[in-house]
Image (cartoon, rainbow, N blue to C red; front, side):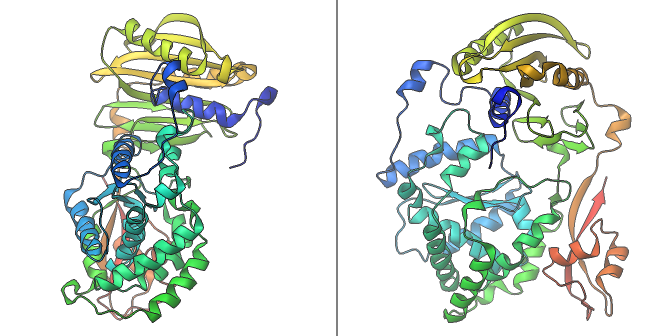
Length: 480
């Protein structure tokens, strides 16, 4: 990513990173400067190192990205993964398979056998073969200890890096490693009775399918370091045609089998993790709402929700993971960490209100690493913990940005009945096409919220098909 400059040469990327670190609990590797100085680069010398670092990174993934709590769907992925690993000639650690609660189509592996696919990838995949090929690719990364060869351990990156970026480094490999993972992953699939052509069919349409992520701007994924989709599709297709394999008869109809597992999956925001309606963020389970500045880029993770200004030069975030306790004590402890980690000076304390809740707002001026940055952090008790709203901007642009940031902070309130009525869930539903029906008619009959071209892409079709009848199709329906 190219870093642009904000007023007085201050890096906008640093502003956003510091804002997110403040929202996510600023000290990722300990709050003392001494601990930071003593940090050493870890080299993955043994499989025991892989297991240890993988366990730590898996905990980070669960907190920073979040896992999908769907035992049946997770078991489906796990069964395929465990069937694939039987073909490994070496297996130095146990494998674990999880689904991250992320709509971006994504798959990645951590050291020590931790393999992940995203909710969005499962929605976009069209049959069991494609899923098996993706899992096989990631299994090879872990089994071949590619992370050890890269020696890129996210825990020992700069504390200013994004949590997702730190985890991404754990799963970023060289292109030769990616090609090796494709080749050996396809062989694992063939040995287990899956069609190795699944990797090629998935890669051919991945780029087009990404635009089906309704309402979600694209964010960097763990797969961005892979060779180009076109190259991989061609190479994996040629390889698949040369591999000898026999279909596992137990699988039956591989498309129907996969669609049966993902029928009913939520697409986009899930109410239990909060939803955006324009600039409003609504959380029915925690019973609150907050409005972010119009035109700012919205972001929701398992640990914080917030927005960044259009050019990335300011940010406001809400997070609720500080411990419950006497408010001033919790805020003072946080301020000490900010001073230690960023060299920020506490300049003002004031008592304010967040809705009807008594709160404290601390103002900071940056020095050291955060030189030229101003921040306001509002602390308040809510839902059994201490919450904080963080606003951060270049000092030279305070007058421009703290107005909308403070308005956003003041908008935190109990969820109104009017706004609760706006909450809905978009779900993937599997329907059966009728004889002579086209995709336009299918969409209208099933009340799919996708346009016909998107429905075609979601199902791996060109869009001009006339159905014979009985074909299983994925559509997306809005449900209250």
